[in-house]
Image 1 (cartoon, one colour):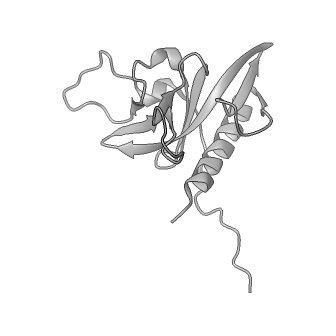
Image 2: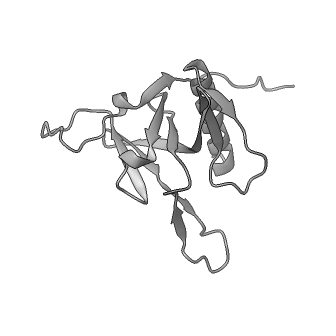
Length: 150
């Protein structure tokens, strides 16, 4: 089983590749204690980006829109949302190979969000965030493993 930090690092690398291929200039902040993982430069305008790993659940890419502080002794609060601290979530989902760039202002939820991949069974479209509307690239890492040495 992969360590959560390794999973997050792979997602960040896929996101950086997708953003670069989509024409964004990507800047990396120094250190681990910023609330954002990347900064993108679009024609001189800078935007803060928080990278997330999405999981395909019931026809939608689900991702956290808050950070967890459960690893701290006596966390208060145990989770903290990113409102007013980031401009975008960049989400990589290995099951769809999609990289999605989602403005935080498009999200009402403060703890998790969903991007619909499959059509809703009840054909509802109002209030549904479709993954295709936010997808900027497809990135696959399948089959790209270092050879085992002997």
